[in-house]
Image 1: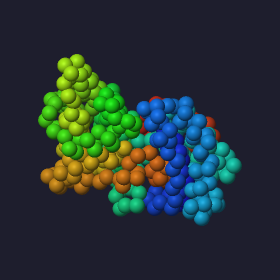
Image 2: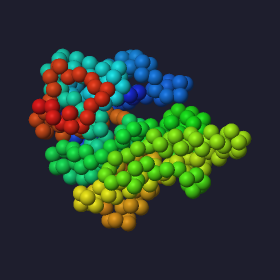
Image 3: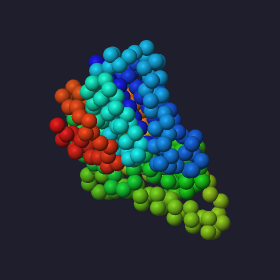
Length: 339
């Protein structure tokens, strides 16, 4: 079964053809990173305009790269939420137009489901497993069963981890995208230079909070600047990153103990972070749990993961009609409840 995936939830216009949820046939992505770098972050209206310009070209190039036609496609999967509403609308509208023109089934995909599915691409990884999703908009712990259905154990109450990375990067004066730059600087810094808080670490459960950590970084930098003290960005980044990863690791340890799972998937854009990968690789060695990361190319937003998640959704017998809409906010539970 071949699924065409379309992803436009933020600033990447991406299309991909994937066979049986696992085998990538072709993928084309148009990035807007350099465009938004001039503004220090993603500008929603600018992002949606570029999606409009790029979407049909990206889909056409995906077919050309694969040497395929619409006759080879079994269904169309598209990110319908959550994300930037204007950006999502472009992808959903395009997918609906293609579905109407070709008669192919339409599958609305939750963005987080796509990140989870990324771990199964070009691999032998199969659920059930525990999944930690860490990205710019999401930080969640989920169980994933054999039917690729999700149960949320916990999530962020305020800023997601990736969002905190970008905000701290701006506080230090790093150019967009700041998250990878924080990780790079942290590699050479002293993680004990600043005593930053570990949000909700002493609270039972699996929820996260990174807003207080961001505020603590801001306060520390403001005090140093007011005192005209020299700020070592490497030490700030290292201390901040250690605080984030300490919480992610401890909450995940608790979830592993609670669920008994022996396989952990770490997905989302922050799963590309070297510090996080190193810490969770050490966790695997210490506990015997298998820890799986998607390849770096599928940690950030892409259409291959949406096609993969669409395949599992289609296997559940779920598809959408042309009333499918885009949703800036969409919970996994609500999405899973759709008939």
